[in-house]
Image (cartoon, helix red, strand yellow):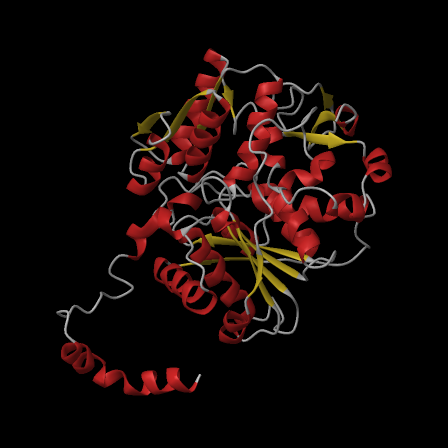
Length: 424
């Protein structure tokens, strides 16, 4: 894919538009604005269309002209193209007509959408010659960097808040990465990583490689559009930590329209946060673009607990531009959201998925999302990663001896349920 280098042209400041070479840099030297990948859309439009995309393997790399690497992917070649599930029972439960789940709980290899961003970041890191890669993480990113770096033969370090869920810590350690727990919140971890990146010259996927890393999230948006039959949902509800995923799904929808893969159409993107750390949601509700930091996040949703969200301003801009809204929810509502998704759609999500479902319910109930328009909920990680959050909230098994008599006694009170099962 030698011509891919032409498609991905530069890094560009999101504020002043200054262009930069495609190196491991992420901040504009003029106004300190964030840099993002820029593309030659006119050229891309001449090279890809629906038929070309459909002819390719079902991975996120079927959209490779719109992803920021120069050659073929070398890390995470099997990542993406997760199911878009029509969830009719959950739709009925929420009182809406048309509901879909974009199910990244089954993404390869670490069961979260972070596999998308890491596959792009590490493929680019290898192109730039990095031998050591690293990240600051609330858990899922650490798992993905550890796994994908191991597969690629790269040395990796992952820095995390020391109080993360044990399952996520083990989910990084198992790959042989260097896991460093920091006594502090994620924002403190992130500041330390910026210092380390500057001193040691490592490839930090969400620091100096961030312009490449963030673009991987677009693949979720591309897949939603294709899996809906080459059209956009009227409403997409997206969990927000830094806010990057929401901005990149918005960018993906616009890029597909820009290069002619989709017709011009209206859509709204909505953001979901946990109330114990909801700086973007709070700002949007106040009709402000000033995101006030949350110094001490207090929520069971550790994967979204970023008190100073790097893309908060841009997430607000995306929601405002598309007529979307933001919501937040309590820990109790998060648990209810996890259970609703499991009981009515058969999908076990981590706590961030509970946030998405709970906030979608609020957006629907307040009329911000009409009940008769298409809705996609983005579910970003598997519930096996955060089982601690629902212990004690889903009941306990009923224990009996291996006796038919005891079984019959136990289900005597379940007669109505049993009879219903026979009729079905």
